[in-house]
Length: 162
Image 1 (cartoon, rainbow, N blue to C red):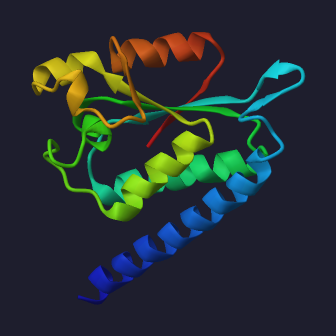
Image 2: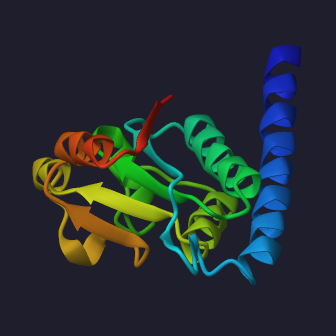
């Protein structure tokens, strides 16, 4: 029981940290041009593999992205590559098999406002019978999550697997 309380507290505190980081990113982004400066695209690039649907896992990844954005003063290109069970992060709540908290939905929206891209695997969508209309507005469809990981790494993106 105490372990469950501690886990809930850690998740709550992690959420507060993520919210604080997102706020800091918002302030930094006002003068940063969304990861672009006068010289063009950022040299800092990272792709996250999102292949699980567990809420704690999702919160950890969203928090990590917020920390990366803050660390690089928003001069970073971030892609969340969602496939397998991770696809549910990008599905409208009324169509999703997984129910995420309002906080998770707000984090996705906030991170997207600051340039984070959310890639939805078309192959996974076909497997679980999702249509384009089932995706949240922040999502963009890609042919394959695995192919996207390969392509982005070839373009110099650092690969983060959780």
